[in-house]
Length: 224
Image 1 (cartoon, rainbow, N blue to C red):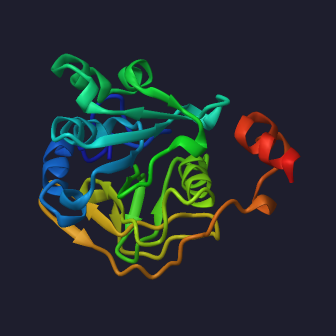
Image 2 (image 1 turned 60 degrees about the horizontal axis):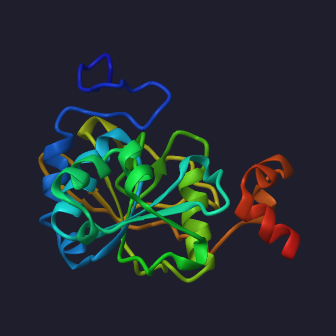
Protein backbone atom coordinates (compact mmCIF):
# COMPACT_ATOMS: atom_id res chain seq x y z
CA UNK A 1 0.00 0.00 0.00
CA UNK A 2 2.89 2.32 0.78
CA UNK A 3 4.55 1.40 -2.53
CA UNK A 4 1.33 2.06 -4.48
CA UNK A 5 0.79 5.36 -2.67
CA UNK A 6 -2.63 4.47 -1.27
CA UNK A 7 -1.78 4.35 2.44
CA UNK A 8 -2.47 7.38 4.59
CA UNK A 9 -1.30 8.58 8.02
CA UNK A 10 -0.29 6.86 10.26
CA UNK A 11 0.90 4.40 7.59
CA UNK A 12 0.35 0.73 6.80
CA UNK A 13 3.05 -1.26 8.52
CA UNK A 14 2.13 -3.04 11.75
CA UNK A 15 -1.48 -1.79 11.94
CA UNK A 16 -4.87 -1.82 10.25
CA UNK A 17 -3.84 0.47 7.39
CA UNK A 18 -5.50 3.77 6.76
CA UNK A 19 -6.11 4.29 3.06
CA UNK A 20 -7.01 6.80 0.38
CA UNK A 21 -10.77 6.90 -0.02
CA UNK A 22 -11.61 5.65 3.48
CA UNK A 23 -14.26 8.34 3.84
CA UNK A 24 -15.88 7.35 0.53
CA UNK A 25 -15.86 3.68 1.60
CA UNK A 26 -17.61 4.67 4.83
CA UNK A 27 -20.27 6.56 2.88
CA UNK A 28 -20.78 3.53 0.61
CA UNK A 29 -21.33 1.33 3.66
CA UNK A 30 -24.02 3.66 5.00
CA UNK A 31 -26.14 3.05 1.88
CA UNK A 32 -26.37 -0.70 2.49
CA UNK A 33 -29.38 -2.19 4.26
CA UNK A 34 -27.13 -3.91 6.84
CA UNK A 35 -26.12 -0.46 8.02
CA UNK A 36 -29.50 1.18 7.66
CA UNK A 37 -31.22 -1.57 9.68
CA UNK A 38 -28.68 -1.41 12.53
CA UNK A 39 -29.16 0.65 15.68
CA UNK A 40 -26.30 -0.70 17.85
CA UNK A 41 -22.88 -1.37 16.33
CA UNK A 42 -19.76 -2.98 17.73
CA UNK A 43 -16.87 -1.03 16.22
CA UNK A 44 -13.08 -1.26 15.97
CA UNK A 45 -10.91 1.72 16.96
CA UNK A 46 -8.66 1.82 13.88
CA UNK A 47 -7.95 4.92 11.80
CA UNK A 48 -9.59 3.91 8.48
CA UNK A 49 -12.92 3.32 10.22
CA UNK A 50 -12.96 6.74 11.94
CA UNK A 51 -15.36 8.01 9.27
CA UNK A 52 -17.73 5.07 9.83
CA UNK A 53 -17.82 5.73 13.56
CA UNK A 54 -18.51 9.42 13.01
CA UNK A 55 -21.29 8.76 10.50
CA UNK A 56 -22.85 6.22 12.87
CA UNK A 57 -22.91 8.65 15.78
CA UNK A 58 -24.18 11.51 13.61
CA UNK A 59 -27.06 9.32 12.44
CA UNK A 60 -28.03 8.42 16.01
CA UNK A 61 -26.60 4.92 16.19
CA UNK A 62 -25.02 3.69 19.44
CA UNK A 63 -21.50 2.26 19.35
CA UNK A 64 -19.85 -0.39 21.50
CA UNK A 65 -16.05 -0.41 21.53
CA UNK A 66 -13.56 -2.53 23.45
CA UNK A 67 -10.70 -0.95 25.34
CA UNK A 68 -7.28 -1.71 23.81
CA UNK A 69 -6.19 -5.30 24.41
CA UNK A 70 -9.20 -5.86 26.72
CA UNK A 71 -6.91 -4.87 29.55
CA UNK A 72 -9.50 -3.41 31.93
CA UNK A 73 -11.82 -5.17 34.35
CA UNK A 74 -14.78 -3.62 32.51
CA UNK A 75 -13.57 -3.93 28.92
CA UNK A 76 -16.26 -2.22 26.83
CA UNK A 77 -17.46 1.35 26.28
CA UNK A 78 -20.89 2.50 25.08
CA UNK A 79 -21.17 5.66 23.01
CA UNK A 80 -24.71 7.01 22.98
CA UNK A 81 -24.98 10.04 20.66
CA UNK A 82 -28.24 11.08 22.29
CA UNK A 83 -26.20 12.03 25.36
CA UNK A 84 -23.53 13.99 23.44
CA UNK A 85 -23.14 17.41 21.91
CA UNK A 86 -22.08 17.78 18.27
CA UNK A 87 -18.50 18.52 19.34
CA UNK A 88 -18.47 15.47 21.61
CA UNK A 89 -19.75 13.27 18.79
CA UNK A 90 -16.96 14.48 16.54
CA UNK A 91 -14.40 13.77 19.26
CA UNK A 92 -15.93 10.41 20.17
CA UNK A 93 -15.27 9.09 16.65
CA UNK A 94 -11.56 8.96 17.58
CA UNK A 95 -10.15 6.30 19.88
CA UNK A 96 -9.12 8.83 22.54
CA UNK A 97 -12.50 10.51 22.35
CA UNK A 98 -14.33 7.19 22.59
CA UNK A 99 -12.48 6.30 25.77
CA UNK A 100 -13.18 9.78 27.12
CA UNK A 101 -16.91 9.95 26.35
CA UNK A 102 -17.85 6.27 26.46
CA UNK A 103 -19.87 4.82 29.31
CA UNK A 104 -17.97 2.04 31.09
CA UNK A 105 -19.66 -1.33 30.60
CA UNK A 106 -19.05 -4.76 32.00
CA UNK A 107 -19.49 -7.52 29.46
CA UNK A 108 -22.94 -8.43 30.74
CA UNK A 109 -24.13 -4.82 30.29
CA UNK A 110 -23.35 -4.65 26.57
CA UNK A 111 -26.59 -4.26 24.57
CA UNK A 112 -27.45 -6.72 21.82
CA UNK A 113 -25.69 -5.85 18.60
CA UNK A 114 -27.10 -5.34 15.10
CA UNK A 115 -23.82 -5.04 13.17
CA UNK A 116 -20.11 -5.63 13.76
CA UNK A 117 -17.55 -3.34 12.12
CA UNK A 118 -13.99 -4.64 11.96
CA UNK A 119 -10.73 -3.49 10.41
CA UNK A 120 -8.69 -5.58 7.99
CA UNK A 121 -5.19 -5.81 6.62
CA UNK A 122 -6.41 -8.05 3.80
CA UNK A 123 -9.59 -9.90 2.81
CA UNK A 124 -10.80 -12.10 0.00
CA UNK A 125 -14.17 -12.64 -1.66
CA UNK A 126 -14.81 -15.81 0.34
CA UNK A 127 -14.95 -13.77 3.54
CA UNK A 128 -11.51 -14.59 4.92
CA UNK A 129 -9.94 -11.73 6.83
CA UNK A 130 -6.40 -11.03 7.99
CA UNK A 131 -5.95 -8.58 10.85
CA UNK A 132 -2.86 -7.33 12.65
CA UNK A 133 -2.21 -10.80 14.05
CA UNK A 134 -2.95 -10.13 17.71
CA UNK A 135 -6.38 -11.78 17.60
CA UNK A 136 -8.15 -9.26 19.83
CA UNK A 137 -10.91 -8.50 17.33
CA UNK A 138 -11.76 -12.21 17.15
CA UNK A 139 -11.58 -12.52 20.93
CA UNK A 140 -13.89 -9.55 21.45
CA UNK A 141 -16.42 -11.19 19.13
CA UNK A 142 -16.07 -14.50 21.00
CA UNK A 143 -16.73 -12.81 24.34
CA UNK A 144 -19.83 -11.12 22.98
CA UNK A 145 -21.03 -14.36 21.43
CA UNK A 146 -20.57 -16.21 24.73
CA UNK A 147 -22.87 -13.73 26.46
CA UNK A 148 -25.52 -13.65 23.73
CA UNK A 149 -24.80 -10.09 22.55
CA UNK A 150 -24.12 -11.23 18.98
CA UNK A 151 -25.09 -14.27 16.93
CA UNK A 152 -24.42 -15.70 13.47
CA UNK A 153 -27.16 -13.55 11.92
CA UNK A 154 -25.40 -10.29 12.82
CA UNK A 155 -23.43 -9.07 9.77
CA UNK A 156 -19.70 -8.45 10.05
CA UNK A 157 -18.53 -5.61 7.80
CA UNK A 158 -15.28 -3.87 6.97
CA UNK A 159 -14.04 -0.96 4.85
CA UNK A 160 -10.94 -1.50 2.73
CA UNK A 161 -9.05 -0.20 -0.28
CA UNK A 162 -9.42 -2.43 -3.37
CA UNK A 163 -5.72 -3.28 -3.15
CA UNK A 164 -6.48 -5.08 0.13
CA UNK A 165 -8.88 -7.51 -1.59
CA UNK A 166 -6.82 -10.55 -2.58
CA UNK A 167 -7.70 -13.27 -5.08
CA UNK A 168 -5.85 -16.09 -3.34
CA UNK A 169 -7.03 -18.26 -0.49
CA UNK A 170 -6.15 -16.97 2.96
CA UNK A 171 -5.43 -19.08 6.02
CA UNK A 172 -8.48 -19.23 8.29
CA UNK A 173 -8.28 -20.81 11.75
CA UNK A 174 -11.16 -21.88 13.98
CA UNK A 175 -11.10 -18.63 16.00
CA UNK A 176 -10.97 -16.26 13.01
CA UNK A 177 -14.15 -14.29 12.32
CA UNK A 178 -14.94 -14.00 8.59
CA UNK A 179 -16.60 -10.94 7.07
CA UNK A 180 -19.92 -10.74 5.25
CA UNK A 181 -19.52 -7.42 3.50
CA UNK A 182 -16.68 -5.28 2.13
CA UNK A 183 -17.09 -1.58 1.44
CA UNK A 184 -14.55 0.12 -0.83
CA UNK A 185 -14.54 3.70 -2.14
CA UNK A 186 -16.32 2.49 -5.30
CA UNK A 187 -18.49 -0.45 -4.31
CA UNK A 188 -20.09 -2.53 -1.59
CA UNK A 189 -19.55 -6.28 -1.97
CA UNK A 190 -21.45 -9.03 -0.19
CA UNK A 191 -19.01 -11.94 -0.02
CA UNK A 192 -19.72 -15.63 -0.48
CA UNK A 193 -19.54 -16.49 3.23
CA UNK A 194 -17.68 -19.76 2.85
CA UNK A 195 -16.33 -19.91 6.41
CA UNK A 196 -18.32 -20.58 9.61
CA UNK A 197 -17.98 -18.38 12.68
CA UNK A 198 -16.87 -19.74 16.02
CA UNK A 199 -19.45 -19.96 18.78
CA UNK A 200 -17.43 -18.50 21.63
CA UNK A 201 -14.05 -18.62 23.30
CA UNK A 202 -11.73 -21.41 22.18
CA UNK A 203 -9.81 -21.86 25.40
CA UNK A 204 -7.34 -24.30 23.85
CA UNK A 205 -6.24 -21.53 21.47
CA UNK A 206 -5.18 -19.31 24.40
CA UNK A 207 -1.95 -19.45 26.36
CA UNK A 208 -1.93 -18.91 30.18
CA UNK A 209 -0.09 -15.55 29.86
CA UNK A 210 -2.83 -14.29 27.51
CA UNK A 211 -5.55 -15.31 29.94
CA UNK A 212 -3.80 -13.65 32.89
CA UNK A 213 -3.40 -10.38 30.94
CA UNK A 214 -7.14 -10.11 30.21
CA UNK A 215 -9.15 -9.64 33.43
CA UNK A 216 -12.47 -10.95 32.08
CA UNK A 217 -10.81 -14.14 30.80
CA UNK A 218 -8.96 -14.65 34.06
CA UNK A 219 -12.22 -14.19 35.97
CA UNK A 220 -14.04 -16.67 33.77
CA UNK A 221 -11.16 -19.10 33.93
CA UNK A 222 -11.18 -19.14 37.72
CA UNK A 223 -14.96 -19.50 37.72
CA UNK A 224 -14.67 -22.54 35.48
